[in-house]
Each structure stands twice: as structure tokens, then as C-alpha cells.
Image (cartoon, rainbow, N blue to C red; front, side, top):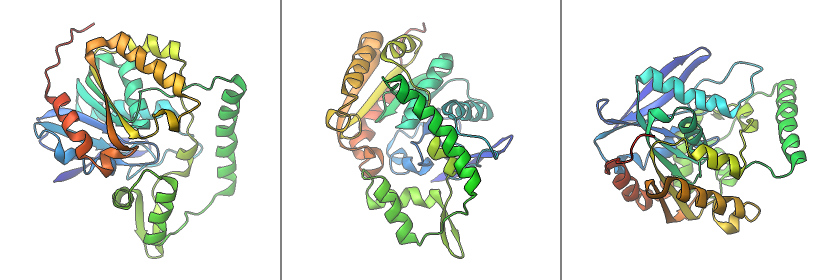
Length: 303
């Protein structure tokens, strides 16, 4: 069983769902880009019951309020969402678990607030977003965010209405790693039923977020700020394996080496069968690894 939570913010609220007793060890769970808190629905019931799990919807996702008119979705805004929720829950130190983009948000939070995180769990994420090696590509990506935002505002599109079947099909087409069951679970929180059909909840502006990119050298320096133990789970058919990231393979390899050389015995790297959404499609593939990591004593000395 879970309960629904709402945290007030200046533009509305951040929604979340919670499992367990509030006095349990706090674990904040962060979903991926354009997903929602339901991404953890099948995993959390398999994890240790002594923890209090809160899975939040980032602003503009799931049941959370959209950001005010005229505001783009900057990567750092998602990190701020995490800080707001932690403050509302009065959590001074907690575990962070993030999938995909949520892992990058969790990583950034650790670098900014290392004293607040006791353990970091990254699902199909290395905690960083790769910086384009070409300066022109970097400039193009930034310009695109501005142009697409202004274009979206000028169009003032009314939300498209879908039949339940079409909405699920559209979601599966956009996420080849999702199963039909997993897609239906995300859609339960990711769409609203109207008399005409389903309307996606997510803010269209979230599709053009302005990201924070890092070079490998910057990543190595940031890793030195981590005070907690780290678990990284990579799927064999996910987005971080060489055949799916041919142009970024050197970055992934260099970053893994940096994690191991910097954090040494305080990092655990695990590779499991499955896709990018293994935690949702086949949660039993990762639940045991995560459970052991959560229950293990954190013996690392504070830096």
C-alpha cells in the first residue's frame, strides 16, 4: 500500500507517493525524463520494509504542477525540486535512488549537498550527462531550447486527446524499452481521463529541458565530493552499453574507471539482464542487489 503526498511550492505543488512508515530510513526516488513516480511501483514493494520510500513527480511530470508560463525546464530546477521535498519532509540525511535522468539529478544533488546523502543508487545512469565534444553542437543544443520554447508558446496548442489504446501505443512507440504492462503503469499517473479521452499530464515544455553537461575531467573532480556509498546498476540491453552508445562508449568507460579509482571500495557496479526499464519491467532482477545495498552498514568515514 502507498499514500499520496503533496508538497506546496510557489507555483502549485510537487506530488509524490510513499510506501512504508514515516519513521523508517528515508529513501527519495527520482524518475526518468518524461516518466513519473509510478516507475517505482513494482520495485519498491520488493525492497526492505524498514525504509520509508518517497517517489516524487518532478515539476511538469505526473501529478505535479507545471511551471509558470514562460519558464523553461532547466536541469537545476529538478535538483531544486529535490531540495524542496527534502525540506518539506524535514529530512537532514537520506538515500537517493534515481533512474536515468533521475540519476543525473541525484548525482548533482550529491555534489551540491554531500552532507545530506548517505547512499546513492543509480539505475541506468552514471550520475552525469555527457557534454558534447563539439562546441558548435553544444551551442546548437542551447539555441534549440530557446527556439522550441518560443515556438511552443506561439502555437498555444490545446492538449491532444487520445483513446486509452492509442495513448499506450504512443508511449510504447516512444519508449522501445518499455513493456505494455510497464507503459500502462506509467500511463496511470501520466495521463488524466477526460470526457473526450486521455490527456497526457506532462508539460510539453519538459521535452526541451536545458541540461547541465560535464566533461570527464569535471566528473572526476565532482566525484571527490561524494561522501556516500554508490551503487550503479546497468542493464545489458540498456542505454549505457557499447552497442547502444557507440559515440559515447569512451565516455562511459572513462567515467566508470573514474568512479572506481575515486570511490574505490565504496562503489558497487552491477550489470543485470534487461532493458533501460528493467526496474519496472523485471524488478526482481535488481531488487536483491538494491536491498543488500540498502541494508549494508555504511562504514565510509565522512570526508
